[in-house]
Length: 477
Image (cartoon, rainbow, N blue to C red; front, side, top):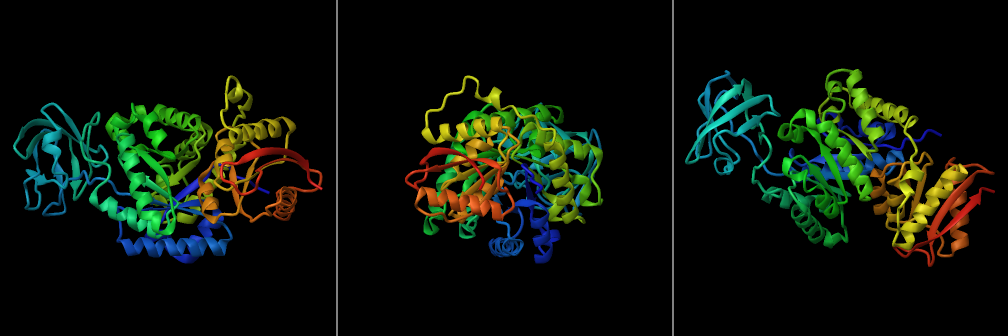
């Protein structure tokens, strides 16, 4: 039985909205489907979520749904001709007061705060850093710049300030409405764009919990790290989130391309140490938007993220708008599995000097340690909330972790955890019966055969969240 530890997040879009294709993509390895709230109306997202749930049911595999909020529109306005060609050395004005379409002299701004956020000498990067402008003066609502690196600038392209410092709030009025939509479709994860600190994430959580109260739904929150200001505050953002996304596009524009690979490794390490999730995103298989095979560099990029210990690797335009959405998922799954074969198990080093205050966390660590040294076939966690599986998944061990839960919401949430295979199973309230049911179910699933050794954790009394207090080493009968 092939088993892939690293999860795949795929963005849904026009190229992947066909129900039959979506089902094939889930069968090929998609674990989480991302709905990009930068595009489409509320009802589009509700309909797409319904498609995902139906496709996942047909494929016999539960997937998580992630609602990715747009965040602030830090963009230029529109041009009369749709685009202009900026020449190096030419003057160009970004004018927050301008209402008419842009031309070669200047353009209006969706982001009206820009004149208050910049001063002479600042460097502005437009369209993911392909256009570079130097600020020469700020006069009222107009930012006068000189083109340092020219090229084609088209409608609504993004603006970044080198080194960070734009004051736009992480949550806009649109995001607040989109959170209500995300809760209506019961999104398992909400990704927050451009958070600067823990307060942004705490506010998002409060809004999600209020909007989800009607359905008794509380999503997991992912902070997208894409601002320079977020880096020094990473520890506090992690503490306020359930996980982070290494969003390499905007982040690279603000901190410089060369700084991103080391930051990626740092973020993944910090997230795992804090018992949080981490997704690596942006341009992972970019060439497959147009080509049926990835470049060697893309293969290395995905493999390195796996070896860094990421929970998931993400596809954006590759599956939303590309020509080969299914092939991209298949290639990514194959790369992940090949990289995992060489992923070092570092369990003993993780435990040296470690202390655990909670009984359930100690049981989770005991199961990992024992299963690793016994060469067990599987680690099984009977879990209500998923916490035990989360703690186990933060450590590098090649033994698959099977999380058996009676709650479909927990099963979907666990779809993002590295090395965790969530299965829906309602067990008996009697411990011995529940353990026997779990073993019979896993044998039926082909996970283990008679004679296999496995570790199993559960809580007594059964069904109490956070109550894991028992570890048993078993040999399958």
